[in-house]
Length: 85
Image (cartoon, rainbow, N blue to C red; front, side, top):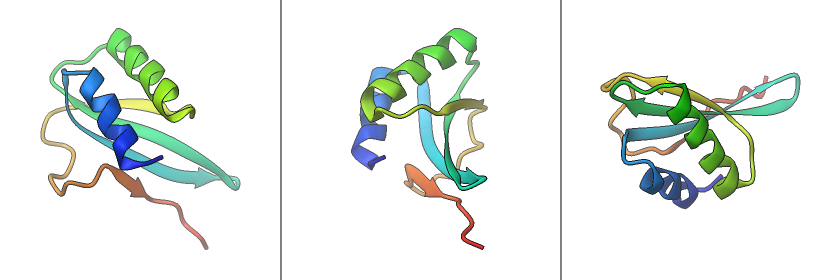
């Protein structure tokens, strides 16, 4: 996933104030969670974002709707939270 792809997803969903793709791993498999800062999101919006993410990135991921102010304002769009222990 590239930052430009995340920006393309953001452009298509005006309700999303901030977005961060968090990559973790479980059982040697990468897991992508897309955290979207939205004021009052619902399941339909999450499904639409999921579809856009899959179309733009060609990858599947979980969508997590979070309230405004929860994501850091550090400008990062992608966070690699995998552990290599």
